[in-house]
Amino acid sequence: MLLVLVQISYPLTHGVGRDRVTVVVVLLSAATALTHAAVTRGVRWAAGLLVIVSGIGFGSEVLGVATGFPFGCYEYASGRLGPELFEVPLVVPLAWTGGLYPVWVVAGLLSRSAAGRVSLTAAGAVGWDLFLDPQMVADRQWQWSSSVAGLPGLEQIPVINYLGWFGVALVMAGLLEIWDRTAPDTGAARWVPVAVFGWTWLGSTLAHAVFLGLPVSAMYGFAGLGVLGIPLVRGLNARRITLGHRGHGTM
Image 1 (tube, rainbow, N blue to C red):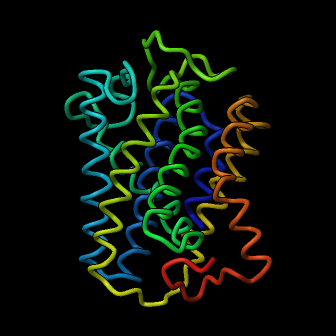
Image 2 (tube, rainbow, N blue to C red):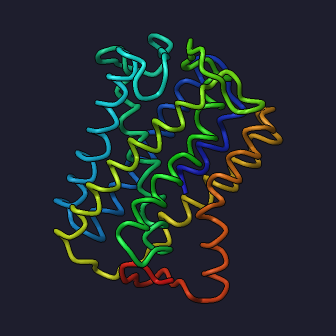
Image 3 (cartoon, one colour):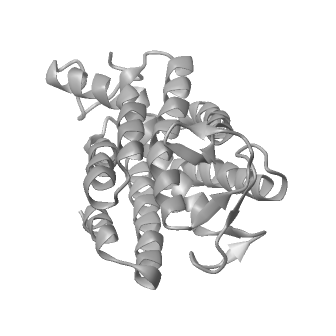
């Protein structure tokens, strides 16, 4: 998969080259999510996914940069990730779509209820961010100026950031749950987003621990996404979860 190959190249690049790899990773992750959504649920549903997740993501980022709510006081490095609007790089909303969609699919495999799926999606989004923010802060793509304390070993990122992520993802997931009812489940294979989820979870753990020199975020991210990843692996091994056809929650 091209997305995986490009992500593997990230630790091997520096400076402008790494910035370009970062942008390409975001574009490929969003394209993978939207293509799978369009094939399995239809182009209209995929467009709604983009509007909900990237739209709310962009709005929350603009609000965050301008006011410090809901993620704490932070700012993006200027000119490194392509065109910007209201001081937010335009690839950032696409990153929300590319990252949240696999979590959303996995959450649906794990939960029987709408409330459970929404909650698991929000929790998984925080788990993903436990990889994302430390990696991007280390690369100086953005930084905080908040006086709020961070997690042990990740003091440069305030705890309020993760609360903000949970709240924003909760809104996204709630709207996706409503939107999900507008298109029938075709029963198409879920292996693509599940594979992306697994690669994000385990591949990021390895990359942070070994190649990026970020062992603390490796532990936090592994535990955070493991809230979904460990039950997923157990369900697949026990054949309580199948990827060829999903009812609304199979466990």
